[in-house]
Length: 391
Image (cartoon, rainbow, N blue to C red; front, side, top):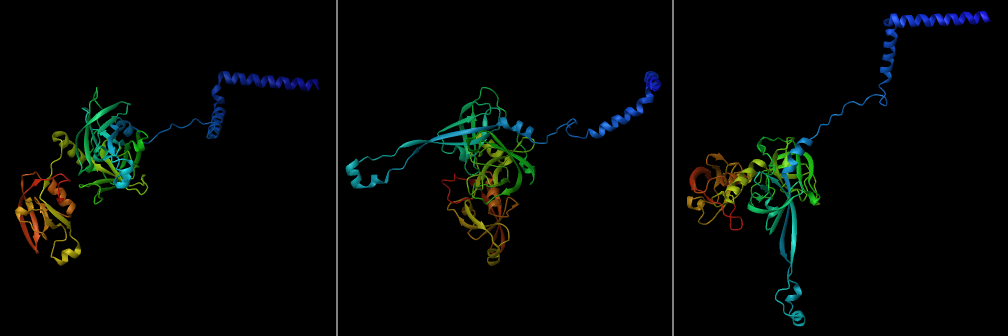
């Protein structure tokens, strides 16, 4: 037994000596085993608990929001509101016992909120007319927390746009205008504003439709429709593209509950910029006017009165208006303005409004089935409260 143990010990000692010599002098002989082991480890490293996590990449619109957010402001308005006279004050018996006060109405301050867009480093802010209409005091809160009083530069009720100005000690971050005529249905947009007064908020959606009109919101309607969430307080805020550039001014929503249903409307930035520049230049917007009342040409009217399928039917002519002086008559169909075809009453309104007051313009008509051309000296469009006929 002792002899067998001795033979075993000598064999193990010799094997270890041989392994030591090989690992020292010829280590490459052992590399095959090492590679095999590494390969086995790599198979088991697919376990998510032992593997290093892959690099995370985020695809979002954070950069667009970062660029646009400093240029969107919150607008706070207030005005005096007189409460109505109590109906009992018209009762002679009540007045006999409780006094004959001629005015028991009380005043209170009504507040409102909205949003606006800084469009100039000099402090000009573009917003909706209905945000600041009839306000006695206007205050603007910047993204950095500063609150500054604002002055109304001018407003245009027919496009629902207004321009404010604040005096800031340093230049303000102005938003870059995009070409809103270049956007397409399906483009991603962000709506930025102050919904319900909760603070600056960004929502995302797409352009759902273009050229929306006949909504009864403004006189001049050419809205961008979007499903980005727009709520009360967002009015006057920015609708921006994926680069953070201004494509529209958020104006209205379609809602049965007062909240967002995914149908919002924004005034295109290209048109808003023209209105803004004219307000800054002169304090108001000047548009052309000829003094006619129009209606749409339906297939039934076209067949009955030999009218063209497209155009605007003259339903009335204002007394002493440019149209009456030029000989326009009810029943005429206007088909062109300054060589531009008229497709419907809305396009007629926009073409006439774009004309310079005092300029003589050629208008194309169809009267009792025959083509007619009249030269009309375009007048200046009166304010909405004084105008009897819209066009």
